[in-house]
Length: 400
Image (cartoon, rainbow, N blue to C red):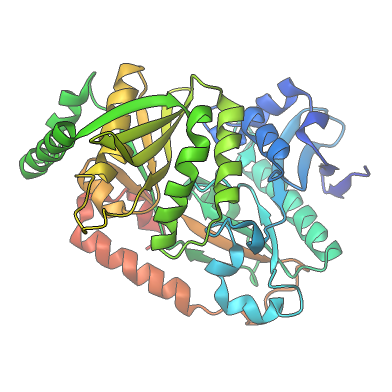
């Protein structure tokens, strides 16, 4: 494996995280981010959904890693619909007509949550920028070797976008994502403390939703491993309703990766039953002081059209995870993307996400990227923020 040099930074291609010493990786990975952890990435590798390689950056002459970039070969046929770059940059599809619909590599993460950069946060800003330049150039080189015109970052969080902004060239393009991240910082010590932070009308609605759910539904938390085959079709059913063409096989692989990475104590399925019938499920993954709600699934309505699951979504995806997080002494529930306003009304902060397309050859995009989708999304978020300013984090200021 020959390093690719960029100034004082060298970038090495590594095929597996097993080729990187655990302590060396842990020195640069963010310990708060489950999706940078060795446990998660090696579980993805075992499932067949792992990176095709890792780009490992070091300062010349030093063994310590100062930055890393997993690269994924994003294939639409695998069913990871949200992480199909072509979905978010449809105006580039003409460039993929001779490439089986593929536009490029996916960089950073394919977890379905916000993407944070794996870079040494103790470095001065100028050095971090040098590291990211080197990783960007190395990723471009890999894409060119594979005959792909672009490298993509999807769902960058605001901190990652700020770090990458000096690296983005004149021909590279970014746009706001169609979904935002939502996170809830838990106040006090129990569910009543959470309720006390909500506006009075919202608090009344939440009590009603929790009460009706408790009256009609019985819940049970089980190790995710035990429930995967049962709940995977339910998750696929929900995603299909929103136009997301995931396969049961793809969802099963991803749930298995969560279970393998975290074990039974930290990867759980919340099962919701009405009159003994399983009608909904939420998937909860615990990482340090955070609880991630990674998936929600439900059955269709009964044949007579009556909904069998009163308020299952917000109970399985918000209220029950909040109660669990309090019971475990956790500080934050990551409620994920989608239904942003509904989650925001229930206390979650709405955080911006960005997409970025890098021209692989480094020669710009020759005007091929349309600016209209980005402006449409910006207008969408401006209008929502104007109507609901209290829900939106200040990080939106620099983007809108």
